[in-house]
Amino acid sequence: MTTISDVVLALDKLSGGRVNDSNPMHSFSIWKDSGIRGKKVLEKPGLVWGDSKRQVKKLAVAMTLSEHDIELAAATGVDAIVAHHPIADAASSGGVTLKNYLGLSGLAVLELHEAFHGLHPGIAFLHGHQVRYADIHYGGVEGNVLFVGTVLPEIKEMGHILDRLHSFMGLEEEGELLKMEREIRGSSSAMEATLVTQGRIVLGSRESPVKHVLHIFPHTGFSPAHLRQAKEQFPEIDTVLASISRVRSDSELVQEAKRLGLQFVIGNCHVLEILENGLPLAYALEKLLPDVEVVVFRERVTSIPLREMGSKRIREYAERMADNYLVKKVNV
Image (cartoon, rainbow, N blue to C red; front, side, top):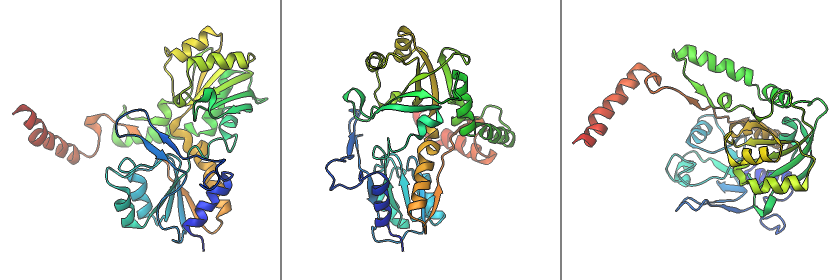
């Protein structure tokens, strides 16, 4: 019989002891704090909530825990959710307290974020290069990940990187799904996150040769100063590859890359991390816990014009509530 404790042990094993608090060499409990009052959260790999002795027959792997995941898990017989991103009261449970919400279904939740990063070279592989130098706290900034890599033999030009991502991420299928959704909803304006944020070239062209890449993740705190430092440290790099987070074409980071004579390409966005990191984690757990059914919770976020959202009846309801109870108060 597999229990929640066995899931914790599996996470500890696959992370090389990063979940075990008794190992002082692997302290991955980290406060995430932007300085916004009352919004910091402690990231702590392992069990967040649940009975460690409870049996686990079905386990879900998710990226960011929300009420959608909790309700889906409760309705489909999931015993535990392993979320990649840090879990926080209210923020991860529809504005209510985690203990009360999760207690209704007896659901256990676990997290494994920074403790999972750096365990496999998959993100670099998906982006078409092999890492020869890695730093997960570049410039002394915790979580500031930097890879220096040499492109794989089949990658000759920057366009090859984008084509590779398009194939691995199944973006053609996502396009077909959106096309069907637009037809069903009668909306030509509906958009979907993975499609509108897909990779693009910022400096250079599809035909621009590429050999040595500096793979960065701007949301982790990578700055123009870090870029200058990296170029001095690795003068052979010809291309900056940014993934997970996006950067504007007029950003200081892009302008610094231009001054340094570097090309710049944007790879996968954050919403595709369920494929980059979520799937490897799910497969690993399936192999370590062979008697547990493993499923993957994937978010699909769409943008729909207000007047096309929902059924005709629900739109009429929403406008009636707005007119009679919300806007009416403002106009009194």
